[in-house]
Image (cartoon, rainbow, N blue to C red; front, top):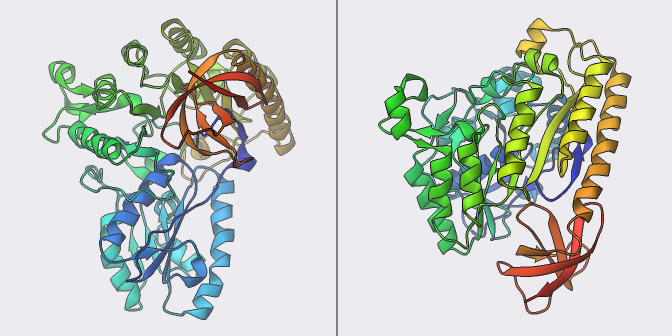
Length: 477
């Protein structure tokens, strides 16, 4: 997740989300999520569906009647961690033979029914478009049958389901605006695990944002694999069949962003993730127009080489990407920018690796998610290209990227000293109960003395010092 001004490498991925609701009746559900923000959002949908059926959630898997792991398939490391985690759940089966263990999400979609054969203790395998079927699948599992539903949908958006906000600070929440992805990046499994892209009715999105604000939430993050390609024409019309006139009348992402911003000026709006080929100046001007739309863009580059970008099937060149960066900095000079970088993609030369390094120096990102290339089954890259970069070369290039990003993150954070930042208080600081923390509009963590302030307040903080990733200061009027 994009939390704070951090340098994040592959070893930091895969943190679990464990949640608990209070209800003494019904079977107990343990739900754990790995991977992207969309998975965490989906877990809230799953919890909503099952709590409506009388389930209560627990943070202790040893007392659970049902254990679900919501999985990520984008890297081999993520799948390995899930398989290791499943071994921990064997003790539940030994203690309670009637306990149900299931795998949800992208890994379930990728491996389908073969997962049941590979992992003998599994009872249920459910893809990301089949969560409405969970009550039926659990009935099947209770009767001793193995249950599988990995059917992908062209329509499912779960727009009518109010998510149960799990493990929430009560201040920030996710709102899913699209599902699936039409971008066939050669390294990525998402189009195969989440299906074709479809947008959600904007009125349902705005209604969810209003409901969250009325319940005390003060920040929403609009989620999609590619939020910039959001387009709603109504009547179930698909984006690919719209005429130019229909597209002009449709709700684009920039229009949706404005609609959510207008819910209330005290409701902060963030979004993730943008795609460079689809990011328009129109979106940037809407961001600049409204103070409550955070001045922060996550714009994955993956590589600084146009040739590598071409074989990645990213749909843009180095020059196009730098044009989008220039537009962000021109329209919002104070905007925070983060990115994704993959090192050691198929056939990447040393010169092309240096092109990535030079692009990073030109942009100077606030922070980045950085990974070595991990070949995923059934992707275009796996079918068409040879994974020919030695592991030690991938690791060395990754370390060079990480080291450079550390330098840039330190520079970016230090630039916040001496300035006043508007901060949304999210809770107590991790290091001291006498301090509070929150984020500024650029998504940087800010820490300050508690005083009389509380979670959900907006405060102005004069920053006096910093670490590499955190600003530290005092509240001023």
